[in-house]
Length: 413
Image (tube, rainbow, N blue to C red):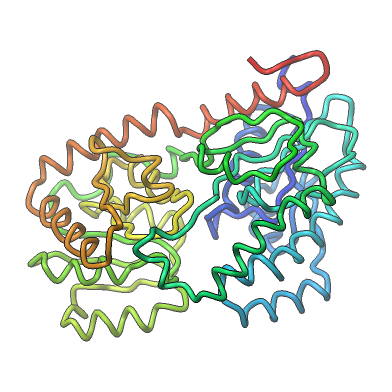
């Protein structure tokens, strides 16, 4: 089958290069597929309409947008009053199901005999899908989830929050039996065994392991930036509690002369800025707010390493982006970063306690601050790993195999 004979209907809650996170996944699938001449369509909520129109001015006839509903606006405002994980599991779920209900009607209008429906997000293995009975094969994922906090940090989350999440997970089998898109999907893709174990029961399709994240190597090029080695560390991410930026800030105090640039925004901004001031590090910890991916790449080019002390990171695309640019990464040995890194291309700090993490990050930061050769060696190894496993072009190569294989008369090899 030629690329032009295949129709791929990408269904996602949203797609955005600007906001990153899981929203960037459907953006990249659509971008790469269209660059190859595949008959791809993108069906998303209208919240990123303006951005997508700017990004794909020649593809406007292939973009379909779900209008924002009054009920969704109400759910969004109520959800903001709740802790993040509770909000996502309740009002966030309801909002996305409303979007999927509208998307399903759009998909039915676009289905052809050579069509495949691909639902790459949400990446949560428990989240239900309404994409059943479409008259076309359904591919879901790759998903990445099944996460818990490290044992030493589980007390940081309120008991009632843990209880609600546990209840939601146990109830997910019932929800997925009623809303049966995922259960009846032809192929379900998972990023790792942790996610496979978290899937709802009763799946009828094949479950395959495929990497969740990829890297646009043109967006994150190696060999740019200052050649002079400076002890400049960088954090990129949402400023939320589980990112544990406080660990890196405290660790910085034990690394004389080093600086930490922080890119991102969120509810912990004032708290962590105040912490840096209280520790006498206000001039060495610099908060830059939210920046575009192009600006992030510029800051990363001048850094000696990326730090990511997150204790609840299912994926961590920023790790791959740093690796693509040939930058070493210091991260928590938990979740996504532990899937991407090993001792050859990064430094992983076990989350045995907060004190141990602060000590481990401080030691790793001192090493990289004082050893330019180590930075180069580890960074180059990371770049090679990305080229081999996480290039978006290779990722789409694998997805093309799967798309074709789920059409009648073909099978996955």
